[in-house]
Length: 328
Image 1 (cartoon, rainbow, N blue to C red):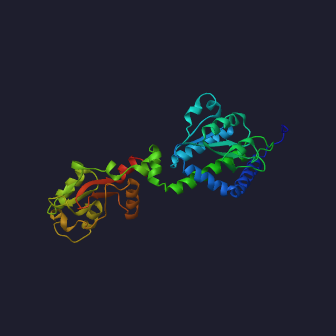
Image 2 (cartoon, rainbow, N blue to C red):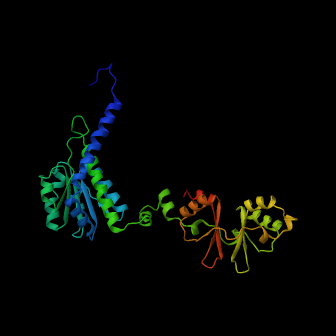
């Protein structure tokens, strides 16, 4: 115990922990070797699921590894070794690959499963800090996750060892992700909820204004009439289209300001075709909403007209709607 008059040096303790764990992760590079490649090949060939198991702190790390694998294209789930001995072994099939974590390599609950795993003929990858342990020796591939010491000054609390195991799990997941050609869209399907899912899945067609909500005028419409249409729709622009809804131009608030600075006589009765913007930027309804935001930011605009391959107007997407959807 510290003397009641002394003050603990929290900063020194925190920095020491970071240095010890950083050094442990740096040494882990030596374990990214032929055994690591064999483990990746085994997991890549897996026809079933990747079953991750571990007890205590290793179990907590195992849950995270399983979650990372599952969300990056490698179907996986966690099985508690204690529960496996009481019925959950039925969740494991011959087509699966088991990844077992144990720093000592001799955790009783995990070792108990070894005869059953071997009897089923299930491939086993171990991740331990002891290559001579029971678990390491029984596995088809052993991944060295050993550390020189824990960050804990008592060298007891799992700290460096759990960090190294977590990084090794991430290394496996990312290696498999790259081998599978996993894409951002694939990732989005594993994360449909929240901001991430919206950013990667929401398309322009999901939030664009369509039908009667789209302001449309003909090229011979007067500025006065066009302004009435713009005001009614509230999008800060109107499309200018022919009878077949082909886009001829766009008239925006910015065009109005520029027209007011010009020398057009009787401006309010001028045809919209004489002051509209031609060849304005348009997008496809299949574009990701996040990509539409990027275009708006690049062009310094707040709305985009959505057209099909024949340049017929299909809708309008506005920055406010994208923000409301939580994409940007």
